[in-house]
Length: 166
Image 1 (tube, rainbow, N blue to C red):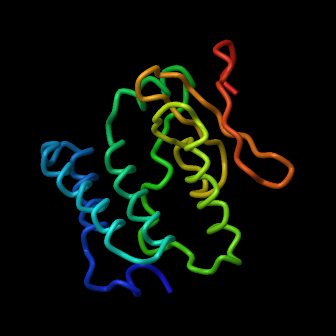
Image 2: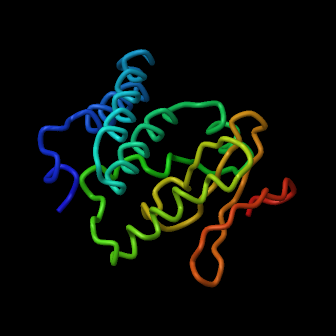
């Protein structure tokens, strides 16, 4: 089962995705997308399901990163095209805690709170949704953090060496 099947009458996260894409393509102005982004976060607070709540928050955060300075900074420094980690997963979120993708997604999204600064999280564009390279860019400092994984698969964030792109 997925989010759409579990909450068929809840359209705010989907609207957030659609309006954020319209904003990214210049079809609408930021205020319309902002309202949809806030509505996706509101859903996260209203539903009583931790996975779907995290999904709705992730969609809201992804929508907010359509075009932010930190994404430009990260792309310039890393010399790769980045996209928000959780951009297009609505309807595909696995509900089983035995599902490795669900466990990984939850660990990755929760791990960002170990960084001492509020960050935007990105992945290299066109990589698997829950695989590949992950980066965080500090909202205030523009510091780039890179995600590595310990032997148990736990995400660990560290400041990226400014002399390298890996």
